[in-house]
Image (cartoon, rainbow, N blue to C red; front, side, top):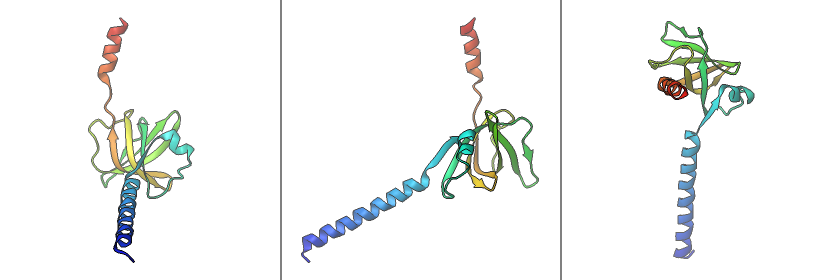
Length: 134
């Protein structure tokens, strides 16, 4: 083969290899952001390697602290609910009635969360709204 052809073939192989690496890196870092209803509508049929981020409200009285430091709680949205198990650092504002975002995947009927985020309540918006209303 001529040197020009060898160089072009080598360049093509290198570009294809790095394109494949970039595609795999982006694909593995994708996280689906869904609500409780959307997760339950899809019947939990998500690939095992995909992470889910689910938004819901913590059901009143559902938080159970286990002896091993993990917690089990229920998040709900419009009457739909799912059980979440989490072990890790619990945000200070995490409590009943707080909007929570959990990231993880399903194992059986329980959502195993690796990350837990509690959305900060918007206590200042209500006061401003009441002032404007008067």
